[in-house]
Length: 363
Image (cartoon, rainbow, N blue to C red; front, side, top):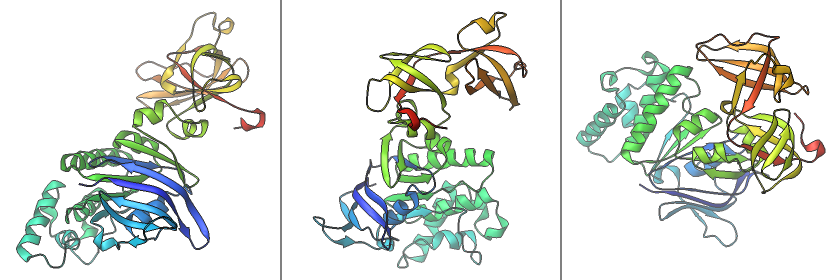
């Protein structure tokens, strides 16, 4: 398999530039999740990688093969989609309704393949995705999850160097989405296939990928393992976007910060040590809730204003003594505090602290 190297990539539509000098490296055999909000440039990047859109400048390399290059200082090159050795898994399967499952999967194979070889490869990939018994079914006879399995089989059939997944689980219900993306990840890992998953779903990116590339305004602003991106966000916007974040205004002093929860240990995020006005970022799992009788006199005191029960846990909205409102998760199994009860919120581990300048901190 081949790794993917994107360098100084610029691209867009007509005079509108969407990608503004983007860089990204995906090692061979790994899955990268490109994570970003709507309008960040994810789809434009995917279209350039697939060969559906020519870049304005920069290069795209699969292994040692330049598949797109444009602009001053770069060799002009463009390999069309059908010659890039890529597989694409689109949203909602996009299967041909008039073809059965086998024909849909075989459609991705080279036209020059011998009939017996093609049939054997179709059988092989259908077995990979546990769809052999549906070989002669039509798409309308399949569930959404089954259609996505067929789409994956079609993408894998030609033995691609790179697989591109365009938010392929979005249309599925929550439990099926979780199960199917785990199956897809396991299969791609077993095959050693290099894959790029485009998604706006933070949980999907963190739970599925080897690397997470966070996009914003046409650039990749951070690349790292899921743990690195979640635990060490490069700036306040990434901290807010990746996972749940609890934000509390604070005053920072080196490795400590004073806030409505008292004095907490912090690690500087972004550009390093912080002094003065700041915002503390905590993850929900770092907050512990207690109900001592003298709650109102302790640091981190507050009052429960709302409780939402989710079975495995409950989400509480706690109003701290200074009026700051924060979400706190408490595990299921015991009744959560009720609205109006006095509680104390304490912190475990270190928070991240980011500098802010007056009006920059606004929710």
